[in-house]
Image (cartoon, rainbow, N blue to C red):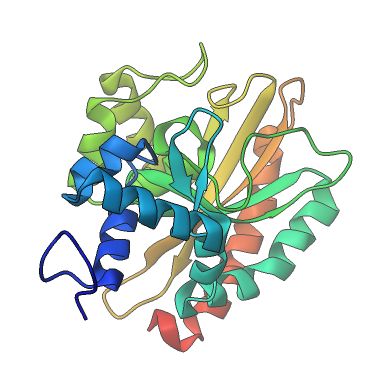
Length: 258
């Protein structure tokens, strides 16, 4: 039904979806006027829908008045078969790595031009990090992101490399240097960063590959974050590789990944 919409021919559901569809990786936070413009609807209609979507938890309003995707949509997204399978399969392997290292362990997948963190294990001894489950961080500034960027389609990689953001004073933003580094990630099979996303931290990550008829595909990245004073970062690579192979083998048996 069209309802009492000032936008003829559009149902309540389609208008609500248009509001949600206004958000993307390039615009994760939007004002009322920006949402109205992007969804091609009147301000009054959008204002009412924003209230309903915020009350339900699909959106949340920030202190500065802008809106962002709410936790409830993230929780629903985790029920998607592929996402749910990945987290369930990977969880014991992440716990094994954390038990062996006592460091923060991350699992991430690529979502557009961002690394989406789908699982994390940490403890009281772990270094504080900015990433949380559900966080979306730049591909070029994190170890898991660089692994995913190295496996991304060429158009995605080029879009990221054209305009990399500076997250800290150590973030590599020179496109030429980033291209060389991503090529090196492909060659050596792991990525590392030094204070590029968070000051005082180092990170290393490896790809999670699944065998498919067309050949192995990178479906996720597994990484560890440690304090910047640590000197054993590369010794963690074999630990991650063993866990990543285990995750990949289990995923290969899961129907959603065939």
